[in-house]
Length: 186
Image (tube, rainbow, N blue to C red; front, side):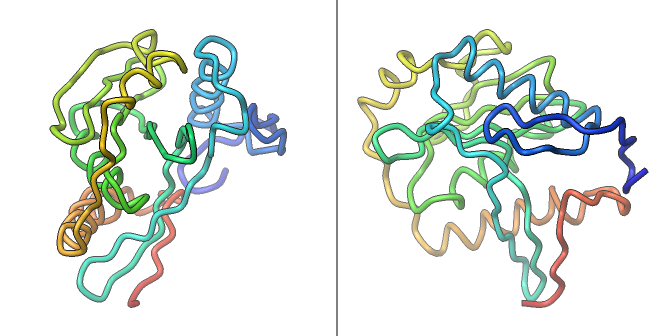
């Protein structure tokens, strides 16, 4: 066993084909990846997986993984953050990540535990839809972002969002969670 995850063997990543440790969480991630490719109409090149985000709080730093980013017309239009358990507690850190991952506000933010999903408006944080089936397909996502301006996030806001994600994802994490890399002081 590694950290708190039971290793069940290996599985191939749906997006990259790379062999990964087969864990319960990874099975859910791969299910989401398969949904994006097989049912939602995204091509593998439009899906970026295992994105890294550096979160800072004062002098402390950590690297947090963002499961998926969907790129259309060279813009990240949707971000998907997986985490087991309750979705409500995932809203705020996912919104913080959507304001840090790129220089502009990602329009659509999805939080999921692999069984349920809530689709959030990145700007307002309001729930737009619920359920894995409600994750926008390629055509709907194109329509949703056609009216967006992709407004830039101000540096002061980035620092605040970074503290929020650090508090939720790092300070609030299980001590044996090996999916977060605590850098220490930065």
